[in-house]
Image 1 (cartoon, rainbow, N blue to C red):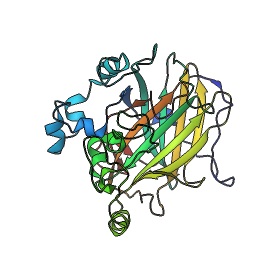
Image 2: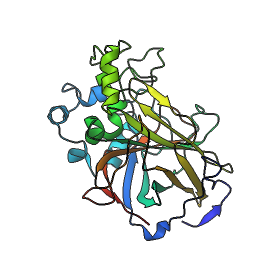
Image 3: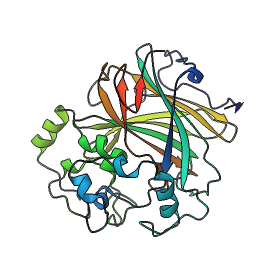
Image 4: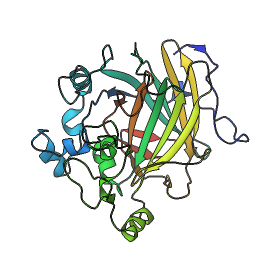
Amino acid sequence: MKSTTLAAALLVGLAATPALAVDWAAVPGKDVTLFYPGQSSWEWVQSGADHGGAGKIRSGKVCRECHVSEEKEMGNTLVLGKKNEPTPPAGKPGSIEAVIKFAIEKDSLLVHLDFKEGTQPDAKMDPDFATKVTMMLGDAKVGESMQAGCWGTCHEDAAKMPAAGTAERTKYLTRTRAKPTRNGGGDELKPAEDLAQMQADGQVLEYWQARLKPGAAAVAAAGTVFDKRQEAKAGVVSAQAVQTDGGWSVTLSRKLSATAPFKELAEGKTYGVGFAIHSGHTARRFHYVSLEHVLAIGQGTADFVAVKK
């Protein structure tokens, strides 16, 4: 993509951190369709009364086994309110196409996304940022991240979802709830000692995010999802964003080594990754998501293999 505005290009993090330079044109990428999911929750995905593939999901099959190459069609159906969407956003595209690449530079993992948002209606939900780009990262310790990407954290009773009412629940993992139901896990958690053991075992997801506003520097954010979404202190993740001709070119990075609850990214290991793009000043609703993908560090067989550059 030809750059027309470079004002948004800035690495956010510690002031002493040098910019990481990767020739992304030389890195092979993967075309990924991020589609509009409506109010399709993890509970809906597992409900045989609602989702034809629920039995396969409960038996351990991954979403992509049935739905790869159907993302655009699903997004178009959902964004028009034909399914799982009581308030369809007029004029919103059903999907966004992104080219996604991974690389290792020095001691950091980088993920790079090129995409065009198309004409987006203004949801007026986030007054500060027009667009947010997020990657969620997990591993086999949180199997739902490998199986269904972001869906493992999206629940029927989360804020803005059908069973939420006035609750402001964030993303969470079902395993943290004492009495999960078809309508979500509610607020009753498992005993504190059980939660502590799960966290010590690494049963936590992490997210990296770039928050974007045309003409301004990218703002990086990172955090974890366990019993709730918890944002970390600044400096864990860095973000670069260049506004391009009709779109964005975004790079997120973090050190391979990490302190819990963030995951140690080790050579030869694989991780589950999912992507989301909030376009048109959206928040919690009216965004785009990918199906689940697998990332290998350094070497291996996966959708993405991050190698040193």
